[in-house]
Image (tube, rainbow, N blue to C red; front, top):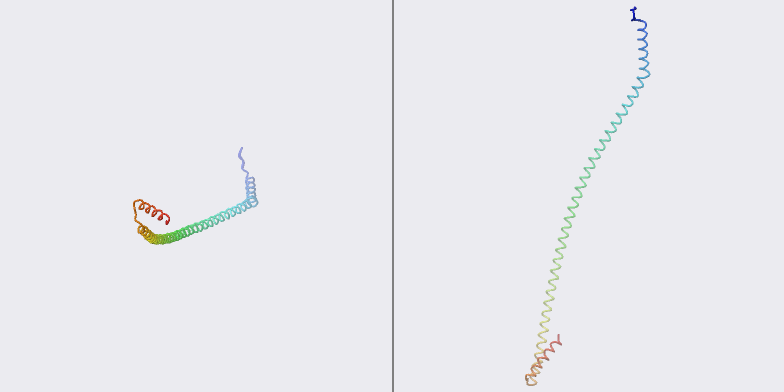
Length: 166
């Protein structure tokens, strides 16, 4: 069939269609299958990477959870240790204060007792000295009659002798 300027040749169409099919099968066999294989290998690699990343994320989350729990437990333990140490220090402080108070009271009582003994000793010694001086004065008075000058001299001697005794 021939039209003037346009002609359709069935042999050419058939030949073109056969060439197209050969080209399609050749491209499919030599190009599409290797490209498909490379693409599937890449997809497998990407899937494996994603799975590894997900596993790593899950392990990291598990490690973070364990770390957080351990940190909380450590905080609680340290707080308990601090409370115990504070209680122990408070009790020890109270013991030390009580011991110091009782020791101070004992020292104070010992000092009071010593002061009382010294007071009695001084009183006894003073009585002894005064009685001795009174006896001496009486002896001197008895030996002679006292005039004003003798009286002043005896007082001065008495004062001097008291000064010597001390």
